[in-house]
Length: 522
Image (tube, rainbow, N blue to C red; front, side, top):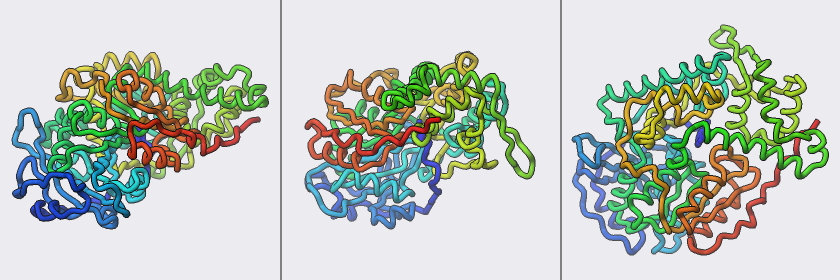
C-alpha cells in the first residue's frame, strides 16, 4: 500500500545516530540551500517549541550527502498543548549544481506509512534525480524510527501482510479465515496498549498533525512556499498539507498515491477494485496475442476460476521453523493476496499460472508463493510499525469500523485479510484527533501531478481520476509495466519538467518506454 503501500521496500536497515544540539541562527543565515528571497529565521534557544536547532545528521546516508541537519521540536498536540514534545530529524540537501535561486524547495513526504527514507541513500538520490537542480528537504515524521518518541511495535511485523510478505499468519496459518484474523487483531490491540502505557497521546499521530509539523518546519527554515512531493500514503499527507496550509504550496507531486478520503472506504469495495487489475492484465495479454486469446477464451472469469480451484484444494507447503516442520496453507484468498503484493514482478506469468491452477497443475506454485524465501523471524527495521497503525487508523477519525463490521467483511471476503488496512482499525484503541472534515475530498486549484504504475493494484490511476473531480489542475501519468513506486527515466523526466512549469501540459510520450514482458503461455 510498499505498500510502500511502500510495503515493497523490504531491504532497508535501521541507522540510528545521536543528535547534538546547537543554535540554528548562524547556520541558516548563510545556508546556500535557502533561496534568496526567504526570510531570515529568528534565533532559536535550545528547547524552544516550536523550534529548529542545527544538529548532527542521524544517518550515514545524510552525512555522506553533506546534508544540513536539524532537530525540530513541536507540540505533540497542536490544538491543546499537553506539555509533551515531539522531536523530528530534518535534512536540507542542496542540489549538486545550483539552479534557480528563487525556486521553492521540494519537501518530501514519506509513505509506508511509517517508512523512513533518510537512512536509504539510493532512495534519496533517486529523489534528487527526480527534482533536478532544486533543494530537497527530507525528514522523519512524528512517530518514525528516528523521531522522538518512536511509535515502536516490532511484534506487529510477525503478523502484518505488509511486513511479513506472503507468509504472514494472516494468509497462511490455517484454512479458517476467522482464525487467521485473530492472529492479527491481538497484536493491533497490544500495540495500542503499549504506546498508551508509554505516555504517548496516540490520537495525535495523524496527517493533520504532521501537516502542522511540516508547516512549522517550513516557517522556521524561512520559506514562503514549497513544492510538496509524496510517496504512497505520503501523497495522502501532501493532500492534508494542501487542505490545511494551501497558501504555502506552489505545486504538488502525488507519487503512486494512497490517500485518506478513498482509503477510508469499505475494504470490501477497495479489494474488488484492486482485484479488477488482475483481469485487466489478462485482457492486455489477449488483446496483444491471438495465442493468448486461444488459451484464455474466458479471461474475465479466469481469476475467479483459479481462486475456486484453490479454495477446493489448497496448496500446502512444508517449511522449517526453528528446527520444526511447519505447514503453510494457500487457499484462493492467499492467491489473490499474493497477486496484490507481487503483481509487478509476476504479471507476465499470470496467463499460464491461472490455466495451470484450473488444470490442477500446482507445480509452479512453490515459486509463486516464494516458499524458498520463508523466514521464521520477520522484521521491518526501517518501519515504526506503531506509526503504521496510528496513521492508518487515526486518519479515519470517526469512520473506524467496529469488530462486527470487520468480521462481517472478512466472512464475505477472506481476501481482505491480506489487503490489510483499514479493517484492522476496529481493534485500535482510539479515534484520531482530526477535524470532522478531514476525509472530505480535497477542493484545490493548485497544479498537481499524479504518477501511477500500470501494474500497481494498490494505487492505480483511479486514485488520480477521483482527485481530478475536485482538483481541476491535476495531471496524471501512468508508467507502463511498473508497479508501486515506479523508478524510470520517464518518472524523473516528467517530474522535473512539471516542477519547471506546473501549469504547462506534461509530455507523457515516455510513459511506455519500459516494454511489457513477454507473456508466459502454455
